[in-house]
Length: 286
Image (cartoon, rainbow, N blue to C red; front, side):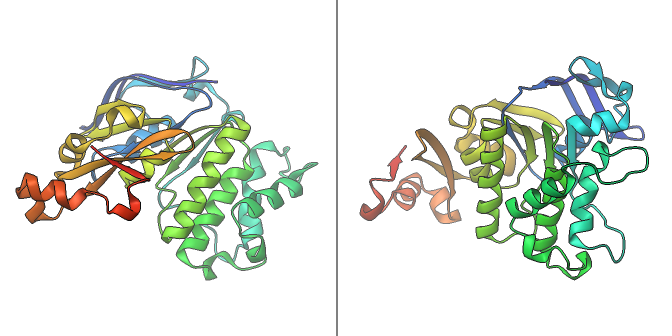
């Protein structure tokens, strides 16, 4: 299964925000999209999910343009989680997660065989099973985000498009969610594309990293090939020092922000980024 965009121009009204000649999401890979605020990351993700009609070009799933797919059939293959979804008043957590089963239900939208088991699985995977009877609006921001993700997982689509899925989550829950997504991608062969703000998280979990600025892709490839201090300066105007860590047999690049004083002094920058002796077995200076 392949999601493929060609000659893509995206915008709102006459204003063009994103222009991409070609983009293909390889099946079974995890892609992270990074870049500064307002560079077009969310706009691109909306178009890839069929939520925004391109001003020019097209997005195809298995060679077939998205508008030619019937909505339910498309939803069985492609699931999108936007930045700020809204839920009906008074809905419970379990009811919300259950909405993910809609594409698999019949004309009367009744529960089918196995729906309850998949809903249970999705809530357990996101660690919200104990919240299933709670009214959604009473949850914390992090709990809501995990409930939305559970609904997306319950859809059981082969392609997941997630716009800033770590929003509202503390550091522990961010790591937990990203580990879950990486595990699902490995175990079920899912194709995942998600927008992240943290370049180091993207570097750690992505098979492929797409870096955007001003509506265009400025870097594209495995993190080890594209993540460096030059990229962070291009994207964010931030001076960083690059270090590596071996994780799961991969050599993963990380970018450490430099204090302004260190950034102005190359010798100080090198000293500031140098690992302490107690961490010398984990990091290699570059």
